[in-house]
Amino acid sequence: MKLFAKHRIKNELNDLSFNIHVEQNESELSFSLKFNSYLYNRNYDFIVKYPDDYPFKTPKVYIKQHVFHPNIYNNSVCLEICRLGWKPCYDINTIISCLILIFEEPRYENAFNIEAGQLLQYKYEQFIKTVKEVDLLNDKND
Image (tube, rainbow, N blue to C red; front, side, top):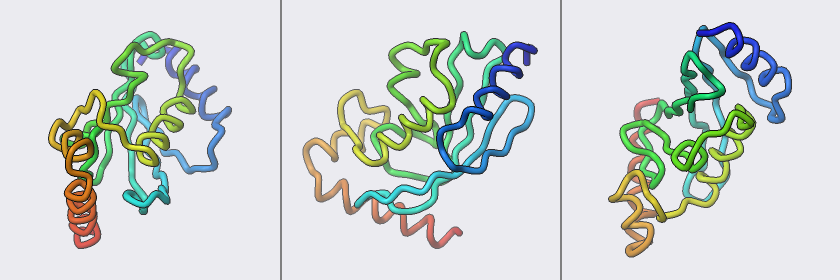
């Protein structure tokens, strides 16, 4: 990872707006977020992987748990800021804010997980049931 990227990430962590513990290694961060929404009410663990030429290239966001969500497919999280065009002015605070938003207000538009998006849009009760079933599997694996 380039020196500029390392320095930028260090500064971002110093300016973190959220009271969370962040683990850092060479090119990735890991942290947990607790959501208190009706659908997603637990701690979730995330990994942000930074490219060598960060902040000019988009970081990748992953979730460790299996989650049924329109913005998550195979543990890869698709944030609108990454999909529509990452800008160097975005930072870890932006990523965390977007994660909070998608978990508190999931949306079906532009779903990364097509099945979850369609259930959310057309069969909301089935969507809720599937979210809860997957969440129970996480409880059994914890």
